[in-house]
Image (cartoon, rainbow, N blue to C red; front, top):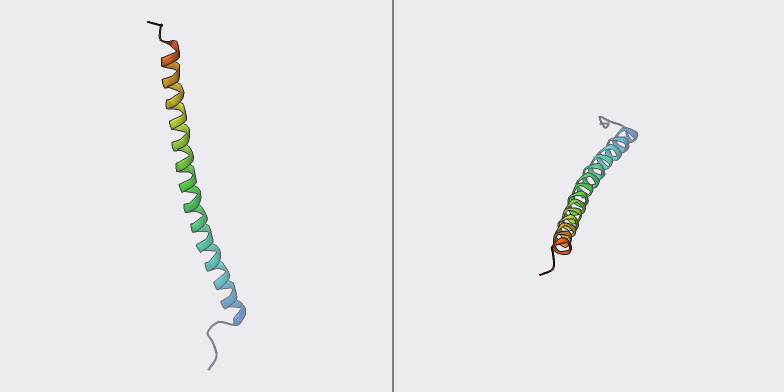
Length: 60
């Protein structure tokens, strides 16, 4: 009784499955890093605005 697919076909299917899994993992990782980066940028912008308000306020 032989295999339905040959060894080369099985190796190709395994390679494609591994590539798809890696692609999904990398995509999720990049999305997480992008979210963290956007959060840091928005925090820095808010800090800059707060400092601008403080420095532009007239002295009392």
